[in-house]
Image 1 (cartoon, rainbow, N blue to C red):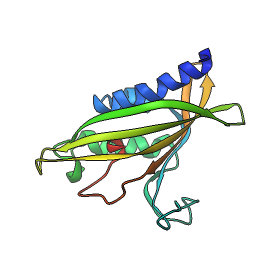
Image 2: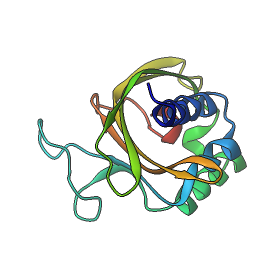
Image 3: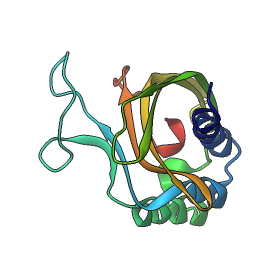
Image 4: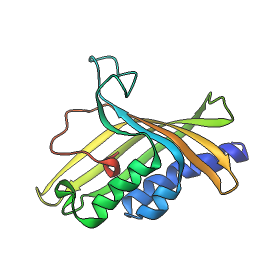
Length: 164
């Protein structure tokens, strides 16, 4: 694996670990200010929505400011769905480099996230694949776009950024 690809893949692994550890500031720092975080809903049984502006999404943030607002709500305990905060364990497969263009590196990664919901005393596993578009900056690789394809979208209770 070349050095750039390895460094970019480490960002994807680090992102998962930071979510599991609830290290919100460090997690947000991995994102570029103009990033996009998108988890589309399935349009049909075989096709995901193609545009966050015209199709439904499970989660959509058009910039890091949206992610920062979500984290502020989680930290402030003003998010009833996140109280108490579910415990998560992300498991990632190897990242495969795909064509990024525009000076970015795109990685496709299979993932699963095991989530324990203490309030309900239940556990659930979400799974799918990511496409991270990363750009190299003076501070290191930053996530410009995170696309989350959720394969098991029959959601038992709630879903948030830390569950995927």
